[in-house]
Length: 314
Image 1: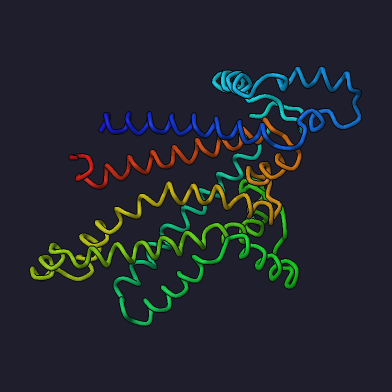
Image 2 (image 1 turned 90 degrees about the horizontal axis):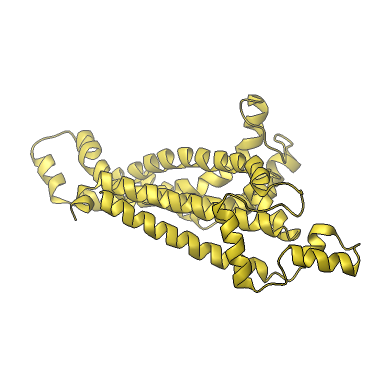
């Protein structure tokens, strides 16, 4: 187990390094001028030249990357061009909102998706299976931002039931929090519910055909006990691998959902950083997202080894 986890940790570090190189390269090739983004366009040529050298823009990209990577290893991501504040301080205000949405969506989508998947597998060929499978297939094909725009138009513009923007933590104002989070959380969760439902159904149908299930039935065990003890426990092993994948997808979906509902999270900050050429913030956001996703996959691999003894034995 320890050898396997150290190996996966080493792979994760390599991925982070590759992501940092690609991120720095792509951000450095952005067409807008970072000097004007930082100081504005009303500066003299002398001031421009001084700022150009202060930002190390006169040096080759590999040299600038090594200098930036060295600062990052010491916890220094630079200063935001837009907010004129430490990058980690700027991100810290937004990170909590995005992570709250991601974890809340995960807590909602997996239990509901597993429950619906169990129903479709147990009721295979019946109307429950047909209806739930049809809805799962339809929802899986609709992008989250399309659902967000439709809900915004119905519940905010037409009916006026819910606010169109903003975010409040539950410990600040629980009632307002519920009103503000219903639509964003629904948009982030509905796709996960459909995906988990489809995967659970497929895994359980495969497990039901195994010899140990027929043996359990031949012993006269109750069907409910067989489904829970044998089919569900073995069928859920592939579902665990979806945790990291789902978190990675949600980190991408928050970019659209947060912008549609004007939620002050990492997704909105990334779009804002692109528009304002805030290179330090953009680089830090991408690196932070890559780190969170990599750790999620690492945690998923750990759970996979714990749940499935065949992997630990191999």
